[in-house]
Figure: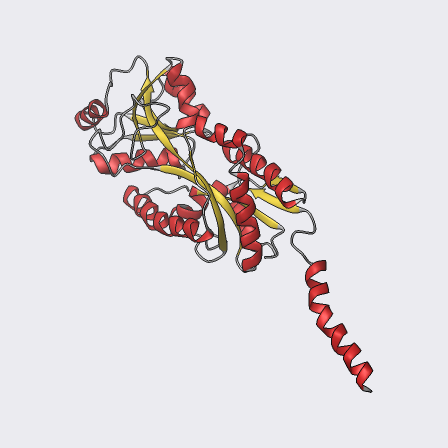
Length: 323
C-alpha cells in the first residue's frame, strides 16, 4: 500500500469512533419507564409526571409501563433484569429497595447489587391520625390506652410491609405496646374504615391524610418527620411526642439495571434534576408535604444503603411475615 493509501486508511479509521458515537448517541429510541405499582396511585402519578418532563428534556419518547404486584417486587425485578442500555428505567421505591429483602423469604433480584440508583425524587412524611370522635387526643393518650389494654387497639395500613404498616410496627416496638395490625388493599380503604370506627388509628402519607384532617373527618396526632411541616405547623412531630425513633419518610427515585454505562446514568440524572425544576411539578410536590430531592446517584445510593438495615431490623423485631 502506498503512502497516499495509508494516510487515507488512517483517516478513515480515525473517523470511525466519532461516527459510531454519533450514531449511538443516547437516547436515540423510545425509553420505557417501569412503575412497580398499579395505575392511579401515587407512584404511578409521579412516574407519569417525570416521564413527560424528561421526554421533553431528552427529546425522546418516554412511556410508563405499570408492572404491579408482589409489594413492588415484580416491576423492580423487571428493571433489574432489563438490558442495561438506558432504555428501560423505572421508579425505585421504599419497599422494594429497603424493606422487601427482609420481608420476603426469597427475592428474584438483589436490591443492593442488581439495581443502579440514578436520582432520588422525593421524600414524604406520614401522619398518625384517629377519627374525630376518638377519645385519643395525643400520642401519649394512645400509648396509655395501649398499655392498659394490650392487644385491644388496632391500626390500619395499605398492606403488609408498606410505610403505613412499618410506621405502626416501629411505633409499637418503640413505645413498648401491643396493637393489632389491620391490613387493607389500599391506604384509602384503611382510612375509610378508620373514619367508620372499625379501626382505632392509622399512619397515612401526608398528601392523602390532609384533606380528611382539614375537612374535620380525622384528627392528626403527630407527623413522622424530624421537624414540623410548614403545611401543618400545628401538628407535633413524633419526636416532640416522645418518640424520636419513629421518624419515617416514604421515598422514591429513578433507578435502572446494573451495568448501565456511567455516561448514560449521568445523562438521566441530569434530565431528572432538570425535570424537578419544573414549577408546576414543584408546586404539586410541595403542596403534598413532600421534600423535593434530586441530587447525585451516589446520594441516592447512600440513602438506600442506610435505610435497608434499619427497616430490616423493624421487620425482624416485629416478626412481620407477608405469607
